[in-house]
Length: 173
Image 1 (cartoon, rainbow, N blue to C red):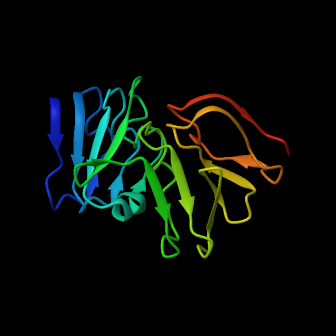
Image 2 (cartoon, rainbow, N blue to C red):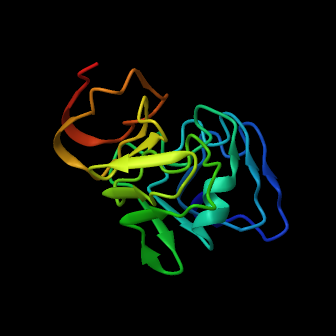
């Protein structure tokens, strides 16, 4: 496979190594997909991911390393919804489970904001944390410059800063 690819509607799972080492540059993932297994996109250089629904994308069960299509991109990466490039993500109260890899690595995203009434997530400075801000979950890959995490942070999740454009991340705790 090479170029652009669309995962057909009705597909529930993208299996291990399904697109490994393919020359796909962009992929459209249907809303029916609920799981992307480990290494599904290993060795690919996908730079654009097209989705129908951001909530459905964030609910996908990403199996781990190389399950997010852009983790190996090596260049500018973007998430698109409904024909528009996603630059900011607002996490409402009813998004209580967000897959660890769902928002990481997309350089089009510069800010993630969780509403104050979200029971599981908080944000500060456009960065996503767990509710009590002890775990840094995702620094948007499009965020530039230096970033200093709050003193309350005691852990950083896997791939929290992947494909990022930050020059420095400082932990105070």
